Amino acid sequence: MPSSHAFEGCNAKPTSAQVVNVKHMGAKGDGKENDTGTIQKAINEIAGTGGTVYVPNGVYMVRATGKGRLRLRSKMTLKLADGAVLKVIPNRARSYSVLKIGKATDVNVIGGTLLGDRGEHDGKAGEWGMGIRIGPEVKRVSIVGVTAEEMWGDGFYVEGATDVAFCSVVATHNRRQGLSIVEANRLLVTDSVFEQTRGTRPSAGIDIEPDRPEQKVVNVRIEHSRFINNAGGGVMIAGKRGYTADVEIVRNVFEEGRPILIENAPHVRSTEICDNRHIGQVAPPQEGLNAFAETVEVVSLQADCRSGRDMRFEMNRGNTKKKKKKPAN
Image (cartoon, rainbow, N blue to C red; front, side):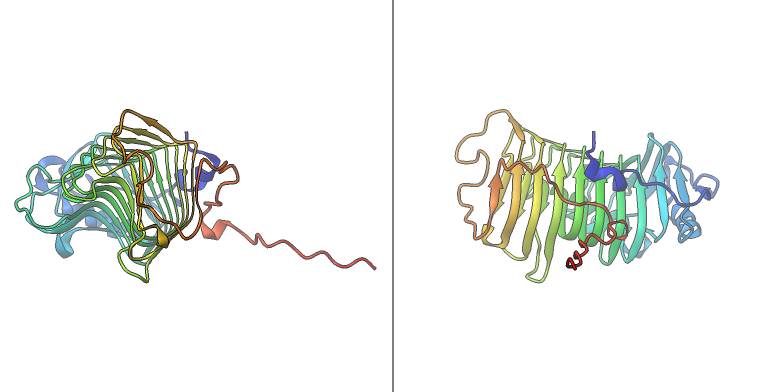
């Protein structure tokens, strides 16, 4: 179960009762018809209202490339039924995204499956086909109960976002990463599964890796999640280019493969790794942390981590500064 750190982002709810059902807008969900335009029309209608776009059971073929792909807007929830699938129309693009969230605030995506074209991709170039791409200029996003599978690149990708929660998500059989965190502040992953990532490097369950010197990843908590047989490791933190600090990796289970890899660690600071469990055998020197990690600041193993990080979204954090006591007369 998610910890108290997760209560806010994981309890994402619409802020209005307005609902638009995509089938009422004309979407077929038959696994044949291109439903992209109809679903986008529903998104545009609900945007800014705090309401919900509802996707009933069915397989909805969607375009994931170019300007015609699905783009979520501010102040809305996209709710997929348990049996609802957004399936990528096979393409040859180097990059794509099933759902794009950019320059937006207060967005929720709840439930359902995003199915990539990995087995049908018409090309060999590129590695950036994403399930959900978050950023730039994004605040307060909750991804809850969503499965992203068979992507040409990553299940989930974050670059340029503040206050993001991944709760009870599943990333399975994606080609490059389960989740890439490239630039973010206050990002929570809880009660989730990242498994069977393989095909092109790094092939990690979660990869924390700024791409450019000016990018930062700070205040990240990864907890109560499972990492199963990912070719490049369960969690990877790469500090070669940008700056990474204040990461907690707490009470997770790693099955097979390398559990946690930290490389180019001079740019990785103030990170705590504790109360995790590894199941299965790993040949040395790959067990645990990479043997070549060299740190200039603290990376603590098996610290108590009991204090935890305040992962509440910024708007709800309030004034946490202590008031100065008045001097006694």
